[in-house]
Image 1 (cartoon, helix red, strand yellow):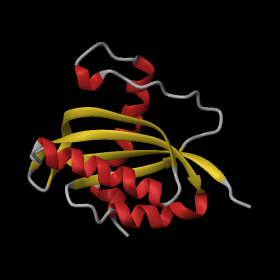
Image 2 (cartoon, helix red, strand yellow):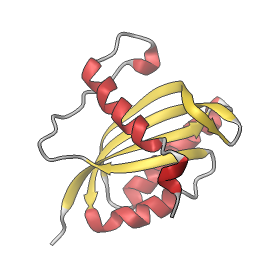
Image 3 (cartoon, one colour):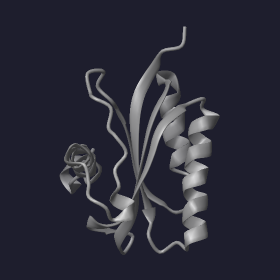
Image 4 (cartoon, helix red, strand yellow):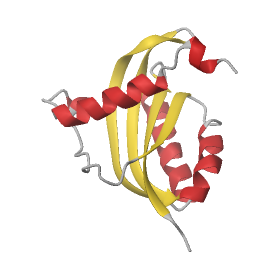
Length: 138
């Protein structure tokens, strides 16, 4: 029996990539999700944003969020595949609580007004992606 679970993937992509390379990177991420039989419910490009700290001498990155469902047994392999994509500076997959209300797409990439609830969800994910050095010690 396949156990479909809802997940959210936030990816930070190298902002120095040319437009075509950036689109190819996003397309590659989408292809990986589909290769694991994930159903992508939402793809939201937040555009270029400042990083909380420098990553490989970069102070900005392009944030893209994917909401999807997939068999939970596929997530570990999906994580490994995502870590091999050129241009991806960081990524994080989180399990979406069952009681969470669906996040509508934002209009951040177009510069229009934003949905406050979307920003709070994004802020939580952004904070979880930026672990302190103490969190990384083994």
